[in-house]
Amino acid sequence: MPHQIELAPSWKRSLTISNPIIFAAGGYTTEATNIGALVTLPTTLHTRVGAPMPRVIEIPGGVLMRTGAANPGWTRVLREHRRAWEQSQMPIIVAFAAQGAREWVTLAAQIENVAGIGGIELHFNPALDAAEAIRAVRAATELPILAKLDLDNAREIAADCAAAGANALVIGRAPRGMKIVDGKTWYGRLYAPSVLPLALRAVAEIAGMKLDAPLVACGGVHSAEDARAFLAAGACAVEIDSAEWIEPGIAARIAAELESQTNEPR
Image (cartoon, rainbow, N blue to C red; front, side, top):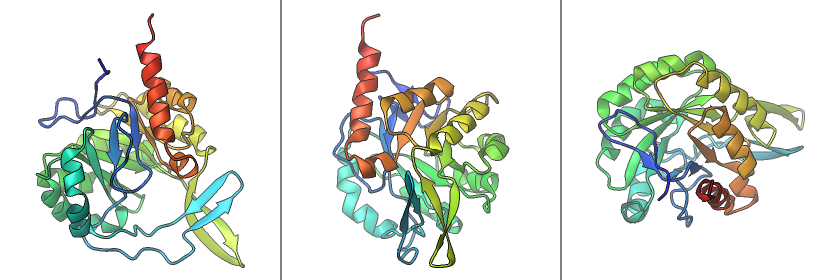
């Protein structure tokens, strides 16, 4: 029997996953059937064109990326994916883009009773008052809330986010970096295996705070060994993002390897 992991303990609506691997590589569906959950592309209430091109710049060992939260908007997303979500065997977690924070309450209320959706993931940056935003969204929905914190200030705000009503903390959003392109500064978030040590340290330190919220790790995971490192540091689950862009299907393979290890006779 699969090991059950609860991401919203003691909350009125549970968010239970059967594998610690969560697909968070963008999009709204996946063909994988053995992962714990899927986190959607960051979504806003209305359509967003997003950042100008280029949105991705290669750097040694990874990429810098800025999307400007480009997405088709909630109405279209729901129309195109509702049936798949209703039939999904895993929870769907809808990510809310930081650029749409003023609309989060309205969006949360619209998502509240959509079949298949198991939770909401709020994406924060240091410019947002995370605790205030969580309290506002909590008043609008009973869905479990996962707060995805920026690695730049995750340790500083983790306790306030848990106290404000976040059921779980995701540590964390990719760190921000800069590159000079044609003599001009270009800012983006860093996706690379080198992010793992930064995220691992943040997870371990926040786990040491013993907050009343499970931790989900994210950043630089490209193997089952990477995932196990996060679990050993205090996370109960791990999101996989950029590794899927390089090697499609890797999240399912990592999930299978972890499941196989769990089922090995002792």
